[in-house]
Length: 551
Image 1 (cartoon, helix red, strand yellow):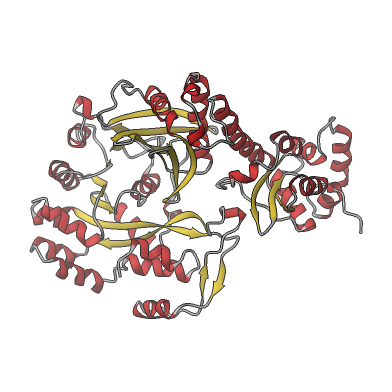
Image 2 (spheres, rainbow, N blue to C red):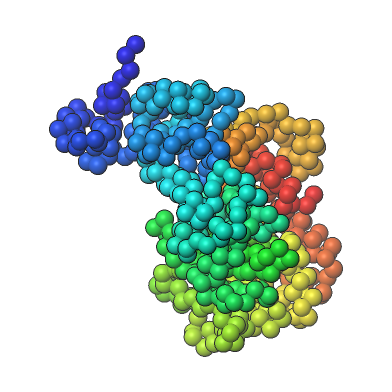
């Protein structure tokens, strides 16, 4: 049976009309594929075309946005071949060479790959810009390393000292490629770790650290020096930790990088925190709250005064929740002022102040000044000390709504933490409106997760929480999720509104157990219960929930 042409496929799928096809054929430029012409003329998007071709040919689409390619497979296929056919090899699996192409109807590339590599090719489709970005990212690394005198086909031990004399320009490219690659893979942090014989580069994606690159140890000093120059650090000082900052644009995103160096016995370790300051704030209904939890949070922040605290360890999404609350409250008739370290997201209509310890602009000092600016709503990035806590609480008692974060493990411990700071119980009782404790868990990949029978342990755990469980979803792994089984993260929450009875107990300096019993009596759902509901809904797995929740 003859294979359908792309124009016929798109007409059958009602994506373009016959007249549009005829027009595209007339306006098709030399060496331009018909699909590219249709996209250029805006008759259809590239994703619409790939979806139609997937339905017609059975060639599965793959997202390369967070895909880590097996670099061994790149040695089998020449860069010029990849660029000529707009394709890139992904990995070898059971003697199959998996590759992505922007043209699923170009079956000649499959035969050429079979002859070139000796493997059986398996085709996936992906947008052209994603493939070109991956070609630049992976083959670009190879070119840069060769320019640095690091041959890809020799061991680290074979690199001679004479090769150390290389120019700065390739190192500039190498650092830029590390940053671009990290942003492309949605990494939150970059770790550059010196070992005895090599430098390991790791990205933290969805909360998990993975090794993405290894370089000879001899390029460490120059790499660290380049990063120090970019972030305004002292390149001559290698004995003490340093902090710096880089603001740049990567992949058309405004990126704020927080840099930290730490001297180790093997050399300086570098960690870069990536903040995408170009994106908008999340909405309250998109961070993972259930309908009931969302209503409780909305009720808390709808009050004209009081203090609302978001608690959890570092990296649990507290600031994202605060920004979602500010997005909800951000109206022209209110004056919102924030004090943050750092400002992670610039919000239109919100006055944001960044802490600067060098000039004594601390949370406490900034907060005092903010109170003279006639604010309605104040957001304090973090309550770190007694002084900040006392000013925030007194601000909430004088007619301001105060939002802030605090490092505690659960909602009740937030109350006891404030008591441990020697803040008067009656002040906490009269000012605290509510506490939101949260964690982040990885979401199952929607492309490859599958239904399975629950284990006896899962059944028992769910029964304890009063939930009947007949099936669960498991992680598998596919090209779309880089064979991790997970893609993205979602919050699980513990929301504690402060009731009149809870205020009475706090004012009486009640014990932790008394406060916890009252919270349970009033219907507070624990972090574990919230996580189990996400498992029941097929959003995540028990393994993910148990990493962050105590039973």
